Length: 265
Image (cartoon, rainbow, N blue to C red):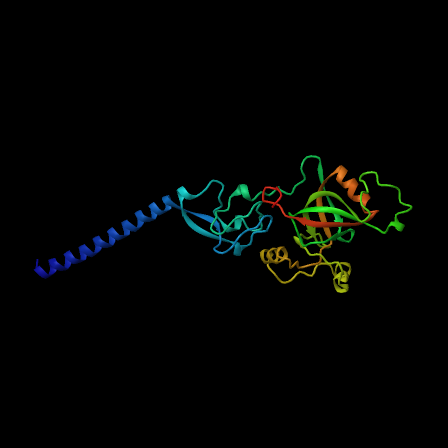
């Protein structure tokens, strides 16, 4: 066999060996990476998920993380967290955990039931969002209008102007079609056009996909006019609230709380 032929065969064999070695190395690396890394959902860079705020696709990213850094209860797909709400602040780069995304945190507790009231029965005096803790007050009618009204049975009139009734949590904000819109803003002087919408036009949602709608609704741009708000109340709180409506205007305002429900200094 000629020397040139031997050199050619050797060169081809060397190239094939290198290709096989490279392929084997890549395969082994992929196996190692598969064992050492796994996908996990994190809060996107520069984003921050606030308590009770619906999660949108823009809020999160899917990244490969070392398996020993992945925490129990983490999520492996973005779709599994969309629309869920956190019970505490989750900061940029943090993993989303199932224990922070409770689905039942706004359900009535023992001895409570959910009650929904028309928005025209109440007067929000601050911007309110689903999940907010609120103080509920009654602002009394003028004294001459209450002369013939008997004293209340379920609360006491201690001030001629207004009395604090109790503290609760806003658990739903809906439009006239019963669709959750999350947010309502104080509107002490109603706009005539907005008053007509719930009566004659119902919801006029913008052309937004569902996640975008949740995003805009929650950030004080509700896509339709709020019509109902709901609270989880005990029997006694319900009696107090419905009775107080006879004596004046029910006003509700936002109370700042920590994620675990304590007062925020």
